[in-house]
Image 1 (cartoon, one colour):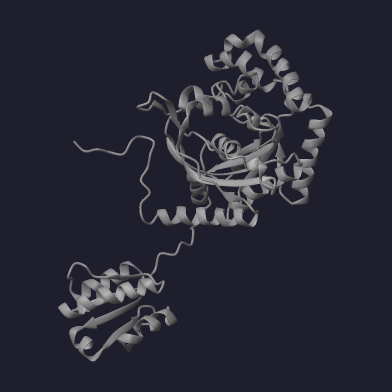
Image 2: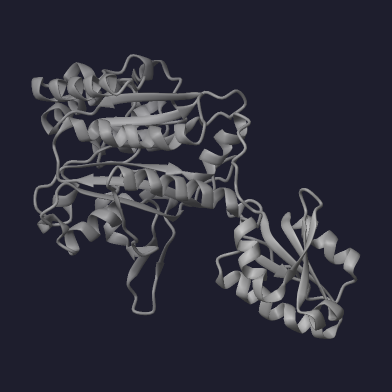
Length: 422
């Protein structure tokens, strides 16, 4: 019986892997320019981390986590998102004590959620995320948003839509919560079971319901914007001011609530407007999460971040017809005729690689014509032909595959020749 790949996962094969590497390197380079440092956390954490950090009322915790017991009967969970683990590490490693603040971090790695697989959505997926901890300045909200936009725009994406909202501070959230409960209570029986359970636990999450999004009570629900106190309103206005100063187009969407419990103040999403992209248009989401560090017994520390899906980024590139210029060409292919020449080619290929060049040789004892075909498939810039006769004369023939020109080179000068002309 054949063993197939698990549902909701994918193999990323050579030819596609280079696209992933290109995107990841581009994002890392941008983070370096913004002075964000990489952090790597475990793929699994104690389950309590996500119960406390993500929120017990979220779909992630209630329906989507991959949770298991280890041999010590400890409950562990494959990470469904990146922020909780980064904040846990921030507290555990006392990064708040570093003299350089705010602490600016980024991560890249697989996440796991038991969702219904569909286009651009997997049960194992890769997120690239950024977290900035230790600043209450609205300017860093704008910086984080601009970093996310820079990643997409640097790859050539143009059909982007940025939406922002404010979820307010604690006082604003409490006032809005009471208004939502009063609004939905009279007709809550018309809503799905999830919404019913959220009414008292976290009524704002009702606004994020996909099943009841077209219910008429959704359209008339009180907006958080109406309940922002003066401090929250001023903060949100400054975030918008900085975005305008950075010439970043955006729309205010009072219905944007995000799906995790830890968000407050600024929330944002970046979407694709590309034709044919699909029903799920969100590429990236993030926001401010003041209070999350304290939830993990750390000092009072504000924070803001975002996470983007590499899979959905690739889908957006495809929708806009953008081909990434990944480098896959080979510098030199060494083709041989004869036993002694084949033995010598092992050393020559090794020396090419040590010199920083990409090199390959024949390992299947194919004829010269087949070796040249292999070199073509590998897009080799040069093919070096070595026979036993050439070996006796201590020379090797080098052919430029683009121009067709061929030159005889002394073997002891071969590496330098390829390095100089590649």
